[in-house]
Length: 529
Image (cartoon, rainbow, N blue to C red; front, top):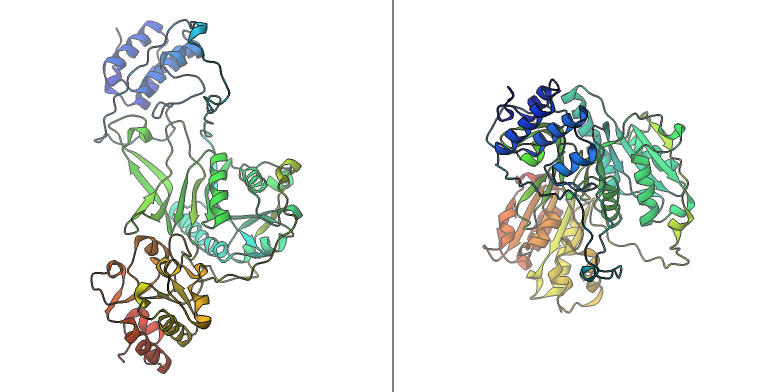
């Protein structure tokens, strides 16, 4: 008999009790009581570890006892973390069945063995790489993408958001952590210094003339090497942790590609296409995260990553939380361009610029661009104070509709014209130069550009989900439509019922005359025309 009833203890408490027991029979009694009671995987594992510690169970027997094949893992069956589990609370009950494990393996009959053609089981040799446990994590890293020797606007936007987040982090936790910019390219030291001016505390760069254009393999390998703190002492002595706490990528074509590959290499998760971020603690009762049912656990310093749902009308907040014995870091996100504002450039701002050291394998550059054509610069709708977007409402006279939209654009100091996918895929006939404004490069939406201007004017736009994703972060949305049931009304700040062919000229005259200014339209205080 034993005085220890495992069903009266949390796993942490039980683990402490087990440390005082050296009798194998007593430990076996506790194990049986656990199996017939709550049957917690983490509690059983704690008993197995104690039996192993006193020499009554070897490592192989411990693995077999829980029915977990070596080299694999079953969610929820991990060793306890060092974090304290809070007060008992209602939690989801989880039934876990013990798997039967035979004492001896038997060889299958030859007739039952299929010839391995190398194709039938493509993942046979694939093994999950367990994330670093009890690691040290710090800082927010930001991938600063470049193009044509310049930092993309979204890179500066992410640096600004990271700066504000980590300043708040210092206030909330009395623990100063840094913003770390990282980039790579050809002759990019100067850009690293620009990252300091825009908010980074440290800028790590890798310079190689072969990195002038984005390449999947070398960019992934370099980023993984940087974030793990690998390299020479000179390039790593500024940090004392295993991996970044957080990492941000731009939700551009290259950024989406790199973010997925790097987070997989670092054995963590990714929230894609985010439009907002904040850091705070989070309490959960999911037994996969707490280690046992019926308890709550508080995770601190959690990056909350907000992104639009596939519906386009709701938002989800993604969390990257650890499992017992398994840590998910860095907490990663890709950021929609235009979601944040950069901070004001400060050329006198102090920071540390680090040149990353790593030998790049020639095999990573098997793909070589021998020649290319330089396309004319595309239309960038981001970064403007005003965006005027036209939809299928121009169908009665497509040419005049585009011209009216352009007139309104010209009335503002900083505006650009966008269109919906409905115009791009239509068979509308446009006269003269107007046709160039109907191309895909001006499309706004899920498969087009994502914009977040101070003022977004949607004329003749129905408000499809795919379009909403591309403009929902705009500060003020004004829509013009003859259909009062148009979906865009649901997410507009101001809805004007009427024909765009009548209303756009009136709006243009009002802006030109100064009766309505941008600030007045944004707060709804503009005059009437």
